[in-house]
Length: 426
Image (tube, rainbow, N blue to C red; front, side, top):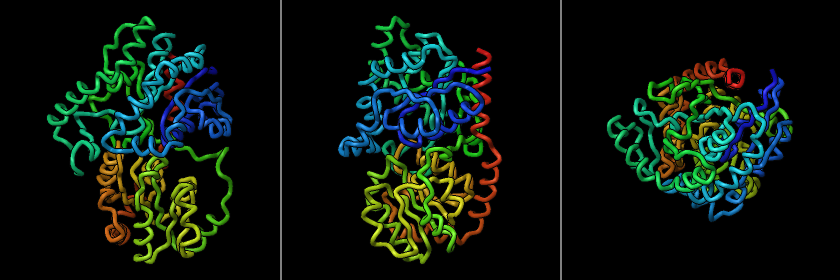
């Protein structure tokens, strides 16, 4: 039976792509799907034939302001800045936008940062599903995450459970006042006061949560929210509105030894510092081939100054490039991490902020990656780490095994099955 489903997300391209992948999957099954998010993503979404509905604020206001962007990316303030300076000042506008989009829908799908969606669902008395894009979202005391360096010095081991419980309780107390705009809007809407912290327990739906990652990097834990289901990564492969055929890239991938691919997430590019300069020096010392996915500004500077063994692109679909790599050097974002795992390639992870350190440690534990603090990332260190990564066969063989397992998962299909089942039951 055809269902009317609204999905909403906020953040970088890494936050958009899995939602777009599932939206396409649901559309192909005959459902009416609307993806509600920032205006800047309209061309991408409509290019895939998916309905689009704009939700304020538009993250382009942050992308286009270098000062705001750099402030948002500081590890010590990123979450606070995003929540208090970008999202919550626009909460009522977000609610109004979503309220119009959600009327008449059968099921709503949220994102961790879409604070208005649970309010709309409660007001309209509609079922909704929460999404966890990465294991860190669960803040499990049974599997304490590795937290960003802003919380403590760069360390690769996890907290002891009792210490993490204390830290979590303290963090909830300190951040509860941030949620005053949510409390005030609830009161104006005639809703009961929130029983759960909107930034923590309140972001999980009583109807169920879908974990859009592989159980290989995080198996279920007893303290995860009730009715949580792991689906696997819902990969987006740009079937409709991709950037088109890049003959130069295709030729580069076909003509020589597999390259090392260097890439950072769409938000981390502004804080790349000398990441790509050090990477180029490391490649020269190693004598290998390389592809650097640098973003537009850096690409324009580099294109005329590199030898034939190196290729610079602003962007290229990971599903096109990573399977041809010999190794991947990246920031540890969950989307990039999932794509590197699926490609079956060993990785050198250079985490910046948020969940990236936790993701890095999880893939290191799988035996497919090495991890370097971004502050320690130099040409000499990159050369040494890549030499070890490429010379010790255990990394490549383990990555190949994990890659096959990830490819055997159907994250989009499992996510669509779960959403269909819930839409039918409720």
